[in-house]
Image (cartoon, rainbow, N blue to C red; front, side, top):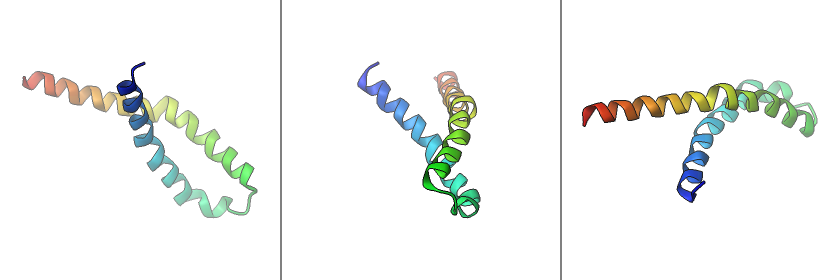
Length: 75
């Protein structure tokens, strides 16, 4: 994988993970704040990793492909 492709992949991951973590903490931060850090981290990752793999990143890929198709049709 080239450096450019790695940077693009990193950006796609960041586009999904940043708002996901922010929303998770907004909705669940207070209720889980009394748990030990390792349990909070476990809950965060057990929910967000599958979200990233099965929904978040495929959605970003689909949106990018739609944008590319529209751009190709306009040429």
